[in-house]
Length: 282
Ligand code: ADP
Image 1: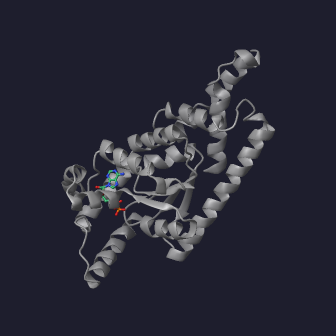
Image 2: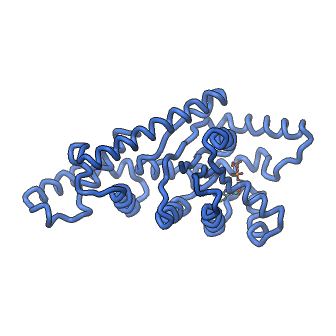
Image 3: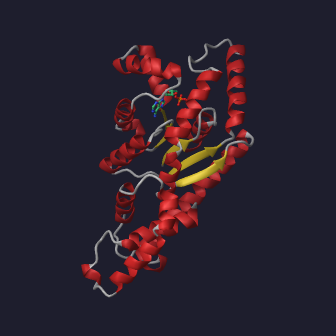
């Protein structure tokens, strides 16, 4: 299983990741942890990242992409992993798609932990107090002002990923404001639902089901091509998708008289597929 945990700082990604690690024997890949280790070890990556991290800014995409790519090549990642804190920007998300495709791997689900931002400051203050009470050293970015900056970075650069993954039909949104064990249960439910959907999609594809939606595809091709098509679309998708409806209809009408073999492989039917998925699953 390959998962992504999305959610602003303090949303509880780390807690849920650890629970999933224990339950499914997955490897947790936290880019924050990897970067902190690099800073501590004084590696070239650490030296580049140190000040940006302390200020609550994101470190450059190329740097994080490189460390994730190298890490998922290691043997212990073969059975699956949970990405915690990556991707955090659209270029990172696209790079991850490319990485997975090159390695012949597939993303199973993206869990988005929905939290009230106003509560996050309270949470982080509690975390700071607890860390102090245990006599442990605070992270340099465990600070209210820095957290505000990290929240801003999340809002600006990471929230577009919600739409991106919704369009890939892998997004599962979970209320992160309830008790930790209830969040865990909701995450498990979301993963189970996702697994059922994937199984039924596979079955429909192999039997030519879904009212013919995937008839022209073989095996995993539907997903790959769908993703490729989605990547070419402009950033603001949901509205855009709704507004293309009449145009899509016109195109569909135009190709009706065209023999099947001469139709473009990237013509409207596949677009309308993803639109149907968007309205059904989001
Ligand atoms: P959080 O408390 O938000 O979960 P993390 O431990 O994931 O924080 O990350 C700490 C810091 O490391 C971030 O504020 C950022 O500076 C850097 N960082 C971690 N992951 C990424 C990433 N994918 N892209 C850019 N910067 C990152």
